[in-house]
Length: 310
Image (tube, rainbow, N blue to C red; front, side):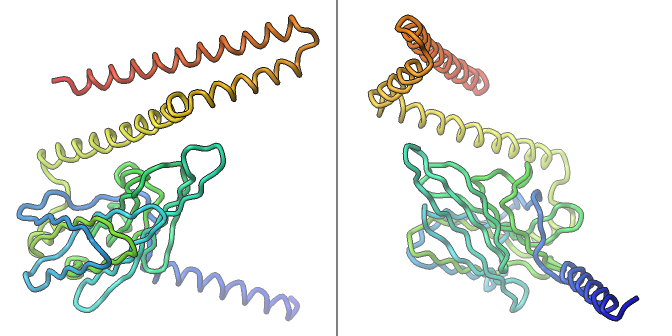
């Protein structure tokens, strides 16, 4: 083997070892599903409307924070710092940006979550004025991850799968619970934190987050609520589209469709009779589409009523 080849192979081996070592020592973990603590007896749930910054420290009362829910206004951000253990801390942020495109009623929205310098993002079409995020002070996927997690609630629940999650591994988490939080944003936002006595949180972690028949029922109820939120969002967005095209801008929609269908019929017809046939056939298809869409909406509403009828 030539000296140059030996030198190259040594470089490759060294790089591979560094990558493996980095994966081992890195506190950030790529996860898409996890479970978090729910329904601890004696927990305190506090909601605040934040102007500028907010700080809560539960150490004086012997409390720890195991969940934080907050909203981020459109085209804004929220920065936060989580203090845990004795003197450790980790910083993160959540933000959204929008990009309005011509002739599209809903903007292209990108959500970002960041924790300990690792950022994940996802782009989708949405029209909300604020977006919900969640921080889990205890999260586990049951195998190789235990720690904190921040995720976007608008892109799915962690129990169903959510690509917009950043996890932060915390060794010996029962001795490294979050005791203090700091949040700040240039725009007003709402925040809800849930805290409880440290010993109660540790007991729940030790015995398992979901044990017994009651907890299984809670798990099913939480899953049903998540599914309901997803369906509700889909229906609301659908009605928003219909309202925009067929109520707020009905004249523009009809004029635009007539112009496009007339131009298409003209370009694909050799005489006036074929033109008229194609043109009126397109109007018939439009009418049938609107009728089928209306029927689908009526059936969907009827299904919702039958599901929630007691």
